[in-house]
Image (cartoon, rainbow, N blue to C red):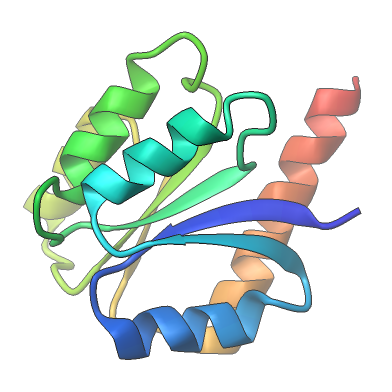
Length: 131
C-alpha cells in the first residue's frame, strides 16, 4: 500500500520535480501555499496524509505556521512533518523543530535521496501504527 504525502511547495519546478520523483512510491496531494495545504488537510480529515513535506518560505502562510497549526491540533498532531528549505542555518532548523517538525531537509537536495528518506520515514511510521 502506497503512503500518502502532501507536498506544499510554491515553486512550480520544484513541486514538479518532487512529484515526478515520488509518484511511483506515494499517493501525492499538492498545495502551492500554506493556506491551500491547510484546506487539503481539512478536506481529507478521514484519510490524512502520512507525511507533509512543507516548504518554509511560501506565500499566505509559511511552512512554520502550517507546522505549528498541524502539531497543535489533536486530529493532525501525529502527521509527520518534514520541512524543506533553502535556509539551512541552525536557527531556521531549530525554529522548525520548535514548531514541531520531525525532519528538516535543505535545498538543493538530491531527488533520489529525498525519495529514499521519505520512504524510510513513512515505512517506519506505518510499522509503528500496526503495533
